[in-house]
Image 1 (cartoon, one colour):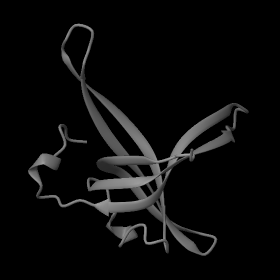
Image 2: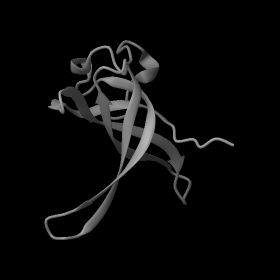
Image 3: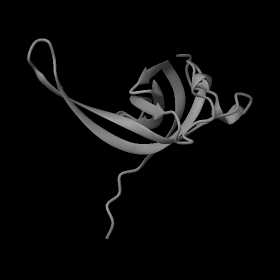
Image 4: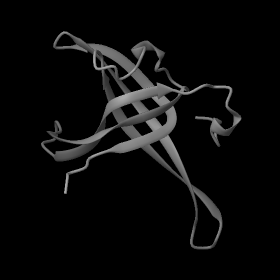
Length: 119
């Protein structure tokens, strides 16, 4: 049996920042996804989840790092990475990030891809 660490997301980019790190460019961006469900009373509810994503240059991950901008629909395939850090208040924290293997910017004119809300 093989180990598997894979995630696939389709959502809207919240923030995006391209920077250089050890001679390579990386685009750090957030992606919001929505999951429609019902609450205990049977009313429709939307569960919103934000993901932090890192897409590195030079691995054929994405055609254009600068094409990843706020409001753009993307599909991200990658793996989850656990990051542990200490805050300035000496609190231990854990964060889950997505390291992109492939990022596809989706066409805006696809009506089925329109967000349920304005972010």
